[in-house]
Image (cartoon, rainbow, N blue to C red; front, side, top):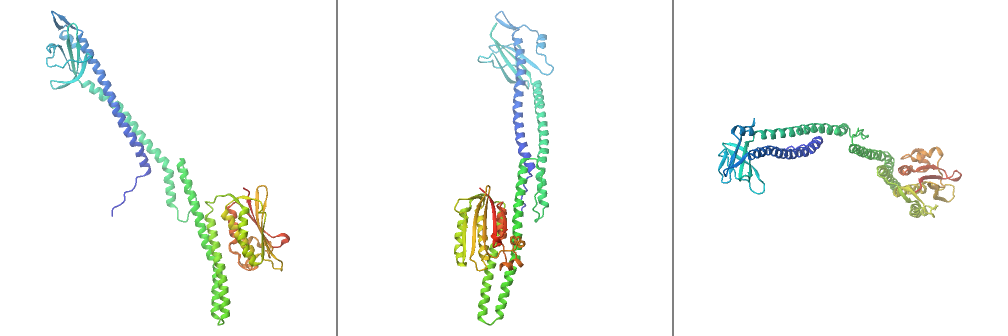
Length: 462
């Protein structure tokens, strides 16, 4: 099986992305520098060659209708002397005949407006650099001076080396410095990778990273935010599983007991009674599961919840209208106070609706009067300077003050459940959780004169 090639390290990739353009720039700069050095070197040596040709031309005179060179051989050697180069010269008439100098050094005369011309020639197996200088006085003639190119080649090589070698050394130093700098800047990323690699699946705590750049700090913050969301999600799942295991144990055991008792009876009427009780227990278990799901969703929604102005009066009006048929069937007088004036709070409409549903359900389920008085449930909105209080109150039996705190615990049972006639379930736990998510405060108490039960949620006014 063919192995998949491993991608390069980030430091190597960044170094390559930086050094490759620098190397290409150095190569292009070197080519330009070489061309400039070659041009100036040629220009300097050519100017010296032209000066020699002009000096020789100044010593050509006319005598008896002919031209002649007035310099002796010794003087010519002094004019053309060079410790490195070998020089040649030739004075030519316009018909091509040579007045003085090397006979083989014949070059076509300069043409055009320029009185001189440079070109490369070959003489006796040597490559030479030559200049042809044309003069019209005293008679038309050309002077050709040529020399070998050893000195100018050496000078050109020295210029190139002195220009390119320091640049190459600077490029190598820059590459080493960039390598160290990139590795230093990416070291926190390696530490982050190692920290994540050592983490167990259950460790979702925030990671501490000493970020040296804003990008790494942003990455670390994003990872820690993700870990925080995962931790909340895992906690919600664990709590949901624990709640399901804890809360469903009692109704399922009750259903099993009712079924066993019914099976032990032979009277069809007993069977019918047990089946009715089983159906009621199943309904309570279904509602419990729904509440558990709502609680889990509320815990998971904590990270992405956005509070905005919500019309509380409209939500209360809609909730009361939905529960009116159930209240009428139970003989409960359900009403609302303070909804005739628009009122907005900073909250989430879905969570506020969930609060109203759970509070009204609890009030209708547990808040009916037991002394023969008409049962009433009232939803009220009270406004203050910076807060708005939503209250749900009934005139039922209520609970002693020391048992009020137990109602916000998930799945309150035992003595509290017996006083209420059923298990307290998760309704008030949901209300408490919803209020916390919306930065609202929840308070439990009794109605006027110590009768009934009152739950108040205080919101920030929009």
